Image 1 (cartoon, one colour):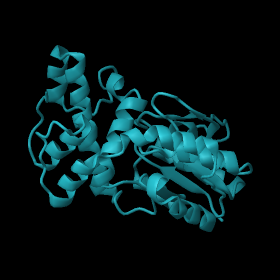
Image 2 (cartoon, helix red, strand yellow; image 1 turned 90 degrees about the vertical axis):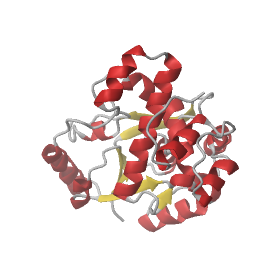
Image 3 (cartoon, helix red, strand yellow; image 1 turned 30 degrees about the vertical axis):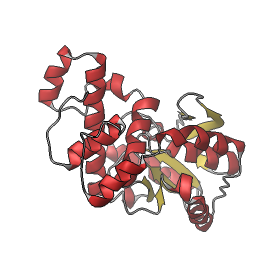
Length: 265
């Protein structure tokens, strides 16, 4: 039995997984707190970072923003100290830096191109990504798009952010092999036993037969990719002009077609 760092990009469903682990593993150290609550409209599972003066940087890993500016050396010290005192721990992380692998096992909650619309739309609907991209300096937008964003209306700004989230997530899939992971967001809907078996092997309890998860799954079903989109991915026919698709699906197809950004009707 060993501690793990659970890592995912915004929108991948990691907070739901954290809630399940928190509710069923009482003697495991975690850098977050959960109460099994869901935001009714968006289906967002509520999680809050937990500050611990013994390991002060771990709370930054649990933030829903990027971990830019974090001191990797000091973070390593915190993780090493954590390992000395706790054999069982689950650390929530949004920091995609493989340097952490030398301290503890990193488990990615992955996804592939077929399931990417779920990730993108959940990111947009459940987080402050759109607001942050026009408020903070850590915008994912490149310099040219930042300049033109000053003259955009809200609909155009949202489309611009969707495009950048799509591009960033495709990059993460390729760089970190997120389409070939031990756990995937898709498992929540189609293969819960895979998740159960994985954590059982690690010595952690997880059971999906909870009202919390039933509610989460029911609300989040609306974000599932359309069959038409999945057919386009399967056949590599990137028809981003198909107006029957969700806007996130169209921008994914636009990116995969190799075209530059454009506003869509």
